[in-house]
Each structure stands twice: as C-alpha cells, then as structure tokens.
Image (cartoon, rainbow, N blue to C red; front, side, top):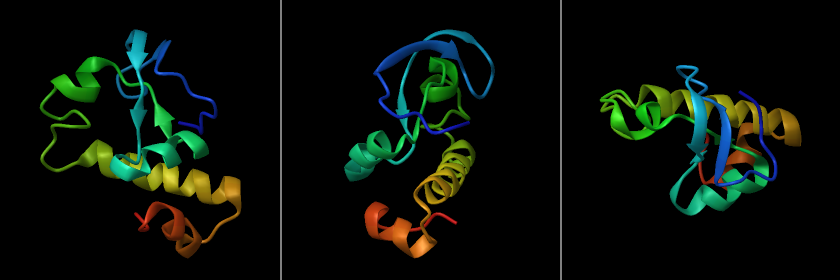
Length: 99
C-alpha cells in the first residue's frame, strides 16, 4: 500500500486485502480528529465493504484490531519516510506513535 495524495471519497480499484474489484469508499487510516491528517499525508485506502465493515475481522469489527493496527504501523512508516520524520515528529502531528 502506498500514500494516496488528493484522495477522493470513492474510487474504482481493487481491495488491498482481498483483491475484490469495484467502487470502494475510502478508509482513513488515522481516524477521529486525525482524519484531516490522513487526507493531507495520504493515509487513505480503498477496502471493499466486506473487508471494511461487514466481516467479523474487518477493519472496524475485529476485536483484535489486526488490520487496523497493521494500517497504522504501515502508514506511519510511509509518512515518516515521505516527510523525513522521526517517530517523535510523527507523534506531534498524529498525537501518538503507533510503532
């Protein structure tokens, strides 16, 4: 997965988890008050509805948060590389480090 700058709400693409092709809604890898930062720095993915919300192991329903933790760690690394930041500099913008 890569950083997506200038993301749009829906995009015809493949789900990064299962490969289903279709028009998928975006998912902000850093939510709540960090959604704008996700958009600014490109931490957006386009999962299918099944992997996003329907499945018991989806991003939003998995009690162990496996996909959610992976996304936060992965995109923190990408943003740090893209911005040439340390984990501390990342945390100043996103309120914490996920590594």
